[in-house]
Image (tube, rainbow, N blue to C red; front, side, top):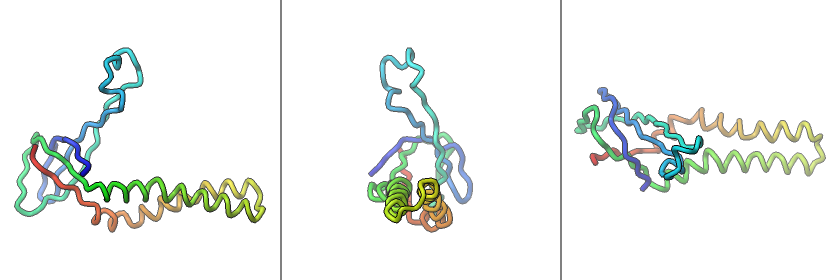
Length: 135
C-alpha cells in the first residue's frame, strides 16, 4: 500500500477534501535552511464520501492506494507516452521520413496518449480507489 498522512480540510455530502503535505527529498536534510532547493508543497485530493463515513474538518487521516494501482498510474502517465514517442520516432526514421516531420510526430505521440487518458479520466478514476482511514 502507498500511504500518506493528511488533514481533512472540507467535508460535503458527496466528498471529502484531504490536504497532503508533499516534501522534496531534501526537506529532511539538516542543511535545508542554507540551501535554496528545499521546498514543501501541499496536494489536495477529493475523495468520495462513502455511506456510513463521518469526517470532521481538521481530522488527521491516512490516505492509502494499492501499489498495483500506483504502478498502473505510472504506466499510463510515463511509460505509455514514452513508448509511443519511441515507436513513432523509430518507425518514421526507418522509413526515411524527414527529420522535421519525424521529430514533430514523435513529440505529438505522447500528447495523443495524454489526450486519450484525459478522455477516459472518469472511467480510470472509478478504478482508482483511495482508502481513507483515521490515524
